[in-house]
Length: 317
Image (tube, rainbow, N blue to C red; front, side, top):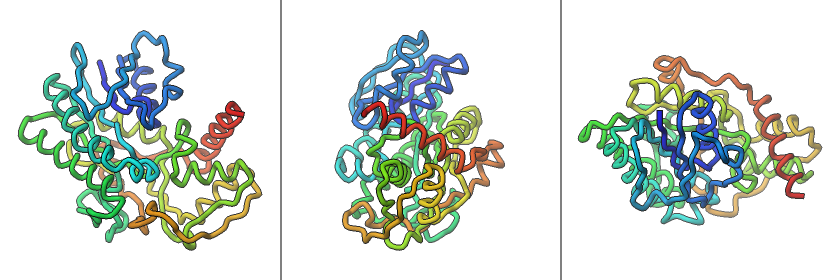
């Protein structure tokens, strides 16, 4: 197959490129490098079936030749990014999704929208199932990301119903692993960086918020299975093993061998406003329809991720 991955130089997109190339397909990675990095795809330079196009998907997209799949992963998923670039976040969710759906329609290609658990907002249902409509503050600081993805899902389903585009929607829960940005601002890179540098791990409030963490290798397997299926309704993908943030901080200390202390701090910026109190996926649909569930234990995934972060830090001096 010939596959376009927007956000292809990003954390998850670059791993998907690796996977599809390993299966013999041709991959075109498209990225404007606002949050992605050529370092994530440097190992693919010169690969005969890999191509990179630097382009902003909020503008008209041209790709010569046929496409079998369009995977739309271009996004600004970190609070550090979407709070700093709120308009761009909304545009990539709206205009970017519109442009990539239009491309899929023109090429008669199967389309994937990489959505997010943030469509559930601060949930009143736990764990979150795909038929839950969410509890989102549309005018809060996180609304630019949450609502951009909710709109993108609505647009994807409109193209599915009205234009008969063969669409897929994956709702991605917290995912971590090698190629995450060190300055990503989310809990995994924050904690690992602090632990590796001997700094105190900073936990907001008392660390009672819950999260679940899926290793990127597992997520990629799930997305590949979803694209090979005929499931067009949204599918949760994440690890249903739930931790409090405090418990997870302790896991990071174990994985890194760090003697850093854990300190509690009061939230001081907009990154924590409307922060979900709980987050855990119900993956019954993925298990039943795709035969998928995560297999990499958090403890093992953290060891791999910490090794990556340590290597990057050492190379930067």
